[in-house]
Length: 116
Length: 112
Image (cartoon, rainbow over all chains, first blue to last red):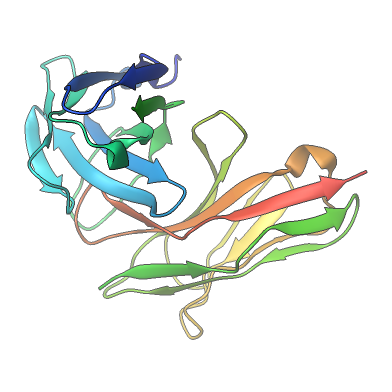
């Protein structure tokens, strides 16, 4: 079974631009979560989607948004890029999202975003 | 709120040495606990997990026991290899779905 895939793997943008990152979960997985990884802040949760609905959101400004499609593929968008948005963006998928229990998350290789 | 604290790295060991990476947590309720590993240039891979108190997770020679009384989930391996060099993250499941809370990560370097 193929793992989580993320495209592109690397991106270079300039301040003020916007960017869209894509994530394809493992086949059959319906929950997709996004994380930002930086040396200073570590791994921080951005948001989670399940059945095309955002079910949970982290403490990030509104410039960060996402969506999920009917095939469970997900995209995240960052508008008006800032230098501090430079990071590794990781996507993770889970087979189920059940209240009271939790399945492990399977991570993709990430998209390395550099903002100049 | 929920949080995870890991011992700071980097940790440098010789091959075949014993490894312990400390992890303590603060959480309400009964979270699941995880160890993930990240090799250079890659995403995170689940190493092991435990879902309730006194559970022991194990994989590839690594072990960790969910200790509720000490709120800890320390990672251990009896004999490390050069190929174990990576960054290790302790994490817990929050009571909000789809969200893992991670420690800061501990870099391990194993020398031959």
